[in-house]
Image 1 (cartoon, protein in one colour):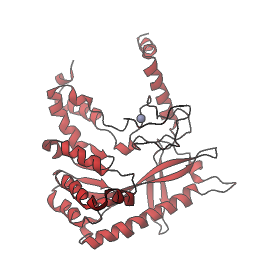
Image 2 (cartoon, helix red, strand yellow):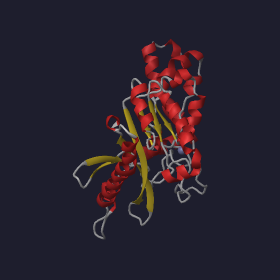
Image 3 (cartoon, rainbow, N blue to C red):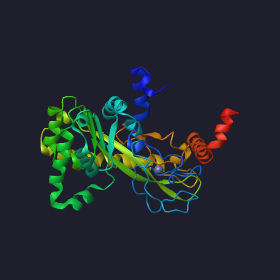
Amino acid sequence: MSLTTLPRELRDLIYGFALLQPSRIRQRHKATCERSQRERGQPEQPPFIPKPLPSFRVVGSTQEPAGCGCAKRRLDLLLVSRQIHAEAAPVFWSKSTHTFENAEMFVEDMGRLRPEYRNLIRHICIVSMIPEPLLRHSYGDVFPIFMSRVWEHVLSCKSLRTLEAPPSFVEFHADENQRLGKELLYFETLTILTITCFIWPRAETRHQDTVYVPYPLEVPLDRIKHEEDMIELVRVGIPRHAFSINNAVHEQLLRGSRCRPPRALQLRLCDTDNEVDVTFHDGTTVRLEFLGLPNGPKTHSRNVRERIMAKHPDIFWTDIRG
Ligand SMILES: [Zn+2]
């Protein structure tokens, strides 16, 4: 039986399972990837970090860390046949959150995309691990020109519902932010996404590792009427939010004493249990997600199994048949 002989409803379900993946910042390394952690309790740097930190080594590996393709989208199904492509491509373009490593990649990829697919896109997330001042500095005087090209592409996605983007997208772009609501019929939320690194004490050792904490801040578009409102939000609102989160994480998770280890260690966070509530000084609580933690027992066992299967596929086939 081939895929095309199944009823259309079932085919749509299969397209969803095969093509819709978690947002790129939450994707994991394949078990066989060189960057997938082999040792229990040791952190695993997420694949959305394109160039691993030079200090990072997978325990037991003698190789230099390298970038890998684990965060890339797997679209083999779209190449199977014309019919499957015609049916499955709309599912992929309309239901995925399309994540780009930075604004340059966004412009490059969108420039190549067929208009019919561009019109289906509903969710865009642009991540930038480069600090804002550095980004502006590297572009110099052409930064505003570059950003207007970026905005042209955003506003050409006529079905866009949500946009997550770094602060450089909104500062000095109040007009474009307003156009999101006016020109894009279905637009719902603009979120400023910042990803911060924290130095995390490694369990039972004196070593330290880096964890990544995304924190989203929704822009109240109805209250941003003028450029000054947006500048205020970017220069005061976002740093204040970041400062509160930094304080809360350091005070509530990282600070310990000789007899009392940091709460982070007591919690024994891992990849499958990676959310913690922290409370700000004003009493509000936010739930933070930590990326780059050690793999928990479930992930570790699954990865071990998958590596053995990849290395000795015959053993498993014999087991199943016998
Ligand atoms: Zn990988």
